[in-house]
Length: 202
Length: 202
DNA sequence: TAGATTGTTAATCGATTAACAATC
DNA sequence: TAGATTGTTAATCGATTAACAATC
Image 1 (tube, protein in one colour):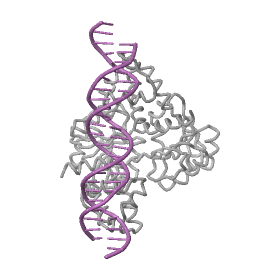
Image 2 (cartoon, rainbow over the protein chains, first blue to last red):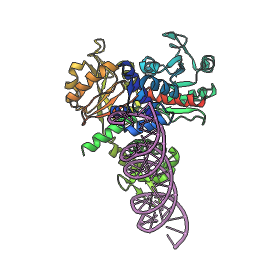
Image 3 (tube, protein in one colour):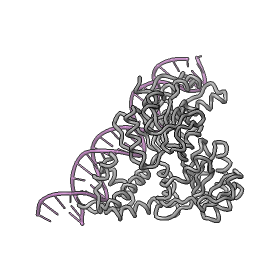
Image 4 (cartoon, chains in turn green, cyan, orange, red):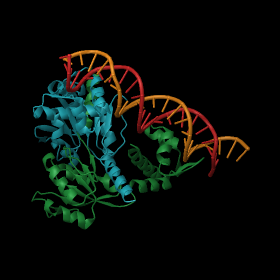
């Protein structure tokens, strides 16, 4: 929860830096996100003393600190599994690159796609997955394959030494404890909305 | 939070029904999701008395109740805004349809896409958005356009009487209070992962 | 020095869990 | 009746917020 908010703060700071703002108080930050200023200060103070009493936080300095904490102060090579519609969308999505994530390899078993390059990123078959992961020092995978292909390829990823998986497939993946798994469920959010509509019309 | 869990329970019950399971206890449900049985009971009891003491919950009955509560006991026509890679991926994503969401119209201003039909769903230009929304009684929109196009089209949606928006664009949308907005941030999840990797290697 | 704002402690709030009478 | 399991109250836990001394 705190980590989630740190991400949000970081984006805010990027924006502020672009706008030429030099310092910001916890109160001003809180106002932007409907949060409480004490919460902002507590979140930040947990990782160190980044503020200056009477002044607030220096935008550039705090941004750098948060990026370091979140691991965004470096490039993370990522392997993208599945290059169908969703995989393709994620590949072209600009948001990842902006935070230092770089898709370094694509895995897809469609013979029409394998061995090609997409914007100079190689597309390989799943049999070459481990080789690519090791050769490129990849620790993060994004899984964007159909539900039934998700677990087998996940097992391969784990075998290849992947440490974190962002899963878009509508499947409940099993991974060993030491691998971090984050699921993104595209339809559960829609269900939340329909709940409110259904309640509203009652 | 509770709503989110209700969605999860519903999926579990769908699975159980397929597997021919007739009844389930709160303890069994809890075990499947690393939850506490008291929490399951409390979540369910909030909406009514669905269980039977000594027995547990009837799978079919509880499923029907939860679907009703979540508004999943009906078809929701949805308008999809943007038919690029992401829009296309969402269109073909099977998870939505399974829960009663049906993409009834697609809006895209690319002249190469307008006026065509995709799997008998019409693709219209944004100037015809309001007409389609009203004609089809659409209350839910999925926004999958680039960041800079998101706010203008959102304003149009609001004007057309849309009541809920699921936003995939990396933009902070402004909507009036009565419109429910749910943001899906594709890269914030990745940042959570990199935090743990960065921490681990420290 | 006066004003502003932090970092942190104490108080509050809400959500989770344990416990158990009710009851199938 | 005995065993199982609910619905619900009371206890616990954790997260949020208020308050304020420290200090720029």
